[in-house]
Amino acid sequence: MTVKKSPPVLVTPESETLDGFCFLTSSKTMTDVLKQSLAKVLVHYYPLSGSMTVDPQDRFIVGLTEKGVPFMEAIACLATSGCPTRTRHGI
Image (tube, rainbow, N blue to C red; front, side):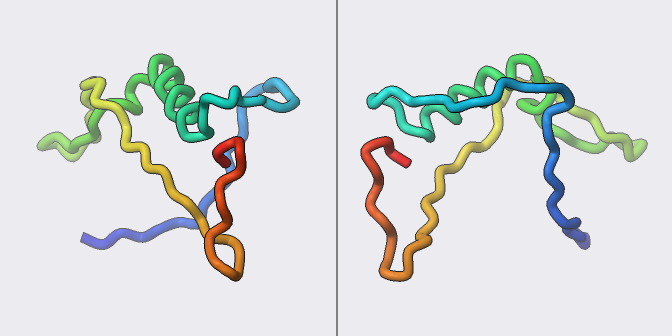
């Protein structure tokens, strides 16, 4: 099997969304907010939480299994002298 990766594209909301800032409470980290938001979105876009396979006729099939999607937290070191410490906001 050969996989060819296409360049990433930015997909924006189809219609106007709220503008402004979302402030986190001190007890929540950005990761918690993103996981909770993803869980809420998957209710409306439930095929994304299923599994995809190919049937004998080479058609794609999405199994509505409610298995969920992988979520991984990553920390990027952007400073030249090592990783910066987390801020009081957990970002």
